[in-house]
Each structure stands twice: as structure tokens, then as C-alpha cells.
Length: 567
Image (cartoon, rainbow, N blue to C red; front, side, top):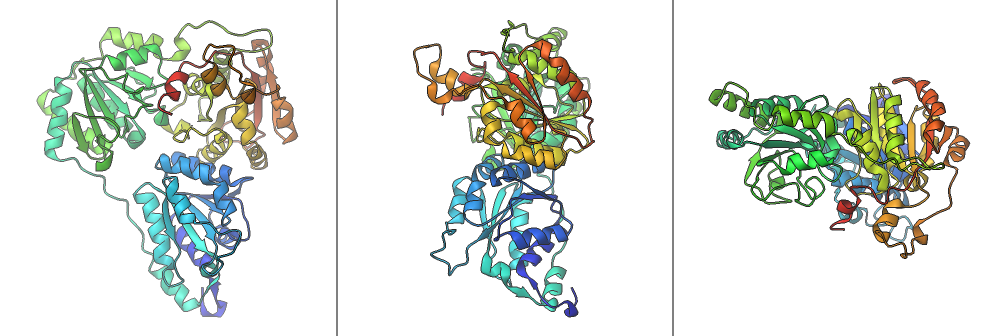
């Protein structure tokens, strides 16, 4: 900006700094408080998607960041706009998603404003980091600090922008000097394990007869290194739900470890004499409240954050280090000691069991379908077979959620988006839209229940408006199924009227939004769905398809009892 161009707002400066630092995409609902900064981001070349609710916008930004590796931003109005987004912010914070919440705030003098709340305290209450735009003079430093915290520390940062500071004017000379101070920020160097820790981990792996690797979010980038090390030491590999697809096509892949596990997967993990968690919290969900860890198994954890080691359970060895770098260095040590790969847990018999029964789709189960409702497993299998390989699958929360998580295949870890750290229903549509924008070359798919779909249904209009060819599979049991099955638990006398609803014609509602809506009650109804899916191609814009699957009761999904422990 030259002197002839006069002055601009501090909000413009904040936007320009974020654009230069490399913000990937902005989602939001624009009000008076965030109008100028949002327009400035758009003017600076940052793509913007207008959502219909701040909660949906926050989850879109969360999913976008997870699937793209770039900073996702959600922008909100002060007070009520920010509180509308809090559930999505809480999910992102609990998942350690690098995300920036760019929210307006009331000015210091407006102590009686109806919009005034303690936004910093609200942010901290859900696990986010509170940052603030303090003054025009500190605007660049404040913005860079918020960006660095989000990206370098993998934190969800709430960056509050008081209205009076936003509106302050920046002269041309100050503008030029401020932007000149914004230097490129290099990638942080990965944490290298010590030689002693590397040797100790190699000792553990070579001493084990039945090792199992469990990879979590912190190992999403380490798939190739973990595959090579596992093959060398004879380890089976398993995935935390958040990185489903990391070991796709590996013959020793057990699939998801934890509540979603098939009987074979659970049995083989529980049979391990060494469990190694790579960037994985090894929490109650992933380890089934410890039931997947045998009494005599040794437990090792690798993480790039010291505070994560042993945080959720006792461990025998903690290794501070980047998961990919650690795996590569340990592989070198192991090969020096033993050049030939070990059989270990990868015997022909075990690999054959994995091939034929580690996937739930290969496990024989009774067909619960009736004349008016389809077994949720059967509709999942039908949809999986009809979808193209290039897909990105997102999951909402509810009794149904194990079915799309286990029965819908994905090509790799970028093909699965699981926003379930907070276990909130209603985030599904936002998740699917954010994942679709991050992975535009893939066909987006959402597995959701009727409760969660209806809770977040405003974002169906966003998908229609954005021409996202989203496939929405609604497991419609006309209830909050998790509560029905959990509280009834075989006792038909327990009243569940408060969580049961009249059957809703979700397909008709979807058509009202401009989407295509089809109803499935039996396998015979699926031909129309198959044809509709075939009309949607990965990477091509299109109309969302909502499949209203009237599902038969499963009496409570296999993972439900595990999920409710410890609530």
C-alpha cells in the first residue's frame, strides 16, 4: 500500500499477515464484528466458505485442517457468534487440531454490551488457547504468535479481535513497515530420539515374540516408516480410529484398535506381548479401557511431546521423538543386529486370520432386515460396493457410527475424517464439507444418524450451494439410538419416550434443500441409490445425495457398552 492509498484498518493488517503466513481456507458466519476482517481475508486471496451456523463453520475448519495439513480458520461474530461455535472449537481443541478461531470481541469500554462475555475464559474451558489482538502496534506480533501456536504446537487458538483495535487506522508507512517484518517461518525440526532411547526400543522389539504397533494421530505422517519397521521385526499393525487407512493393503493390518475392533482384531491385540503406541494416546477408547493389553504385555509409547508419555496409562518405556524419525532410526539399529526380517507375530496362520476375519464385513452376522427396515450392516456393505475407490469418509456420532467406520473402506488415512474426541452428535455435515474442500479430488461421503443429521441440517444448504457431490448415508432409526439401547439395556420396561421420535421423511426434507433424496427400506430399494452414486464422480461438482436408510434395530451396536464406560 503506497502513501497515496491513505490508511487501512488493523483488521486488514491482520488478514494480510495471515494470508502471507499461508492460511489455507476460511469458514464462517459473517456478522458486523467480523465483516471487515473476513472481507480482507478474501481480498488477500484466502478462499472463504460461508456456513449457515458457526458450529458447522468451526467443524468445517477442523476437518479441513485435519485433511489438508494446512491451517483452518473459522471466523465469528463476538459473543453469541463465538458461543455458537464452542462445541466445534472444543472438538478441535481436544483433537489437537491446528486451527485458528478468528473472532471479534467487544471493546474494553463496552462493559454493558449484550455481546460481552469472557471469551478468553470460554476458550480455555474447552481446551483451546486464548490469544488476543492487543493494540495496533502489536498487531503483527499478536497475529504471528497466534499462527505459530496453532501450527507449531498443534493447538486450537481463539484469537479475539476487539472492535476498537480492529477499527484503528494504519497509515501507509506503518503498514509497509509492519508487513516487512513478517518473515517466512520455517518448518519446525522433528524431535530426534536419543541414541539410548533408540537402542532401548530396538531391544524391546527384538525381545518380543508377538509385537503390535498401534498408530495414532501423531503417526499419520509416518506410515511408510512404520510399515518397514513392522515388517522387519514381525509386528502386526493397527490404527487408532482417527488414522483409519494408514495401513491399507498391509497384509498385517488389523484395522481399528479399540471399541470398533472386530473379534479377531481384539483377540490378536490382546495376545501381544509388546504393544507399541506410535503418536497414540493409548487411552480408554483405543485400548478398550485396558482390556486389549494383557497382564504380561510390555507397553511402549513414542511421542514428540514429553507430557504425552504415560499420560493415560502406565508404560514400560517412553521415547521422546517424532514417530517417523524414530521408526527410521530404530530400523537402522535393528538391521545392524539382525539383517533378515523376523517372522514374529506375522506367521502365515496369523496373516491368514487377518485376511479372512479382521474386517467386520468378513464376519458372518445375522441379517436383521425386515420388510420395512434394513440391517445397518447390509446397507453399509451396499454403499461401500457402490462408491468409487477415491473417497473421503466422515463420521458423525451415535449408535450407528461403528458401521460406516468399519464397513466403508478408505484408500489411506487422508480418506477418513473422525471428529469424535468430544463425542458430540451433529458435527457430521460440517466435517464432511470441510473434508471435501480439503480433498477435492475425492468423492465425499458422510455416515450419520437421523439425530445428528437433523441437528446440523442447516449445513446441507451449504453443501448444495457449494455444489459438493456429497453422499450422505443416514442411519435412520427415528431415535437417539445410543440412549435407547444404553438405558434400556434389555429391559423393555424402561421408558425411552424422551429419545424416540416419529419417523421422519429425511429424503423429502433433503429434496427441499435442493439435494437429491432417496429412501431405502430393503435391499431391493438400493438400485436407485446405486444409479445415483454412479452419476457422481470424484473431483466433479454435483448435487448432494441423501440416502434415508430406515434401519432395523441392532439392540445396541457392539461397541456401545465400551463407549459408555467412564462417562
